[in-house]
Each structure stands twice: as structure tokens, then as C-alpha cells.
Length: 155
Image (cartoon, rainbow, N blue to C red; front, side, top):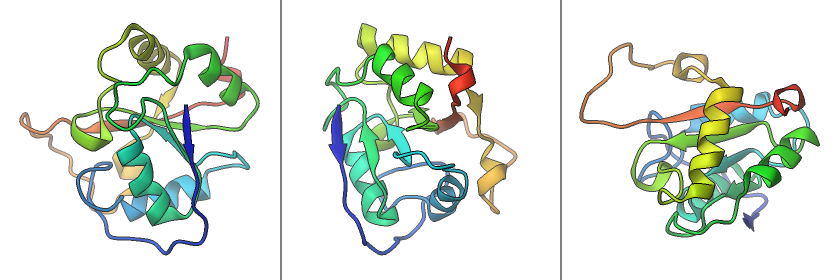
């Protein structure tokens, strides 16, 4: 797992619906900070590129689960459960495509993590953090989903 940290960097612009090629979503960052509940990590994301955008925009530590290109097998299910159980991580972003999505190149390890998160975590509705959340979805755009995990979710 690559752990990237940068403190004291001012916030950036905003792309709706997760991370993309631009700056991180400032509404999502504000929501995550407000609901961080003492966790060490603001969020876990698929790639270092996504993590870097979030770190620069938030000034908070973010976990890159699958490395720079999203193909490393840095995060295991056991490690994720450990971080959640200790209260060090509450939010994970999976799904979508591009810099903010992908479960890690489709490896068995990333698929196992993704399946466990989807089964055990609570999806955060975009309307919970975005004033401009759309009620319709486009079939051509694949969005990522942010999930909340708590120690009680680890079995």
C-alpha cells in the first residue's frame, strides 16, 4: 500500500461525482473531513493519481490501494479490515473508470476487496455531500461510489 501524505496544501476546484482528470471534488472532501470521526486516513482510493489529487486538495492523508496505475496489489482484504477495525479508515472509493475508479486492474485481490466493501459497507449518496447531485444517471458515464465502513462492519 502506498501511503502519500502532504500537509498544509490549500483546496482545489471541483469535479462532480468523484475524482477525475481534474481537481478533487471539494464538496466530497468537506463531507469526508466532517465525518472522518478521528480516522487517520481521509479516504482509500484505487490509484496514486487519485490519491495525489485528493491530498493536494484536502491536505489530508489518503491511501492508494492499487498504486500509480491501479494495477499494484498493495491493499489486501486483511489489511483493509485491520484499518477499519482500528478506526483508522472509514471511507473507501471504488468503481468508475479513469483516475478515480477501477478496482485495481481486475486482480483477484482487488476483486475480493471490492466485493467485501460492496457487501459490508454503506454507500454514501452523492446527495449527502453534493448540492448539485443529479437525480438522473448517464449510461455513458461510469461513476465511482464512496462507501462508509465502521469497526462493526468487520466480521
